[in-house]
Image (cartoon, rainbow, N blue to C red; front, side):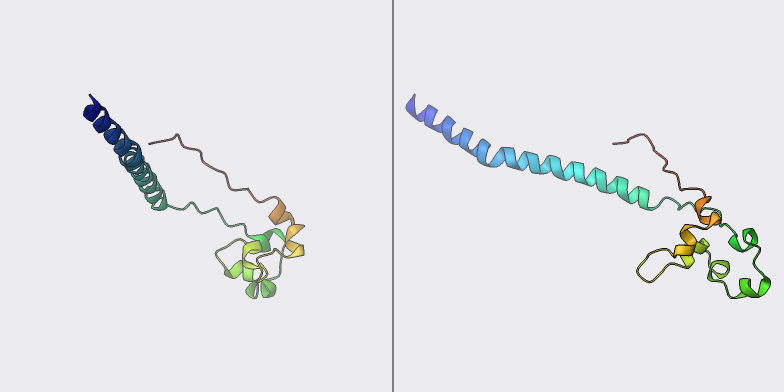
Length: 114
């Protein structure tokens, strides 16, 4: 009886020290691969572009000023084209009616898939 009990203790020790951590590692690998596949699929979704607001028309800018305006030449909205090098918006943009009334981007919530 003693050798059988000792053998069971050794097997239980192997299960606790090796089999359970290996099983948890395999489960974690499967979950992370599914998550990575979902993120890869999301990365290939088309990016929705917002309609550009033509601020020079809303502000009634003269054609000479429009010719030199960064907002008119860029594909980005005017407040994005005129950002400072540190990424901050200009003070004039923060109070501009075109900026304050621009539609905010919306988040589309999709059902979870796993």
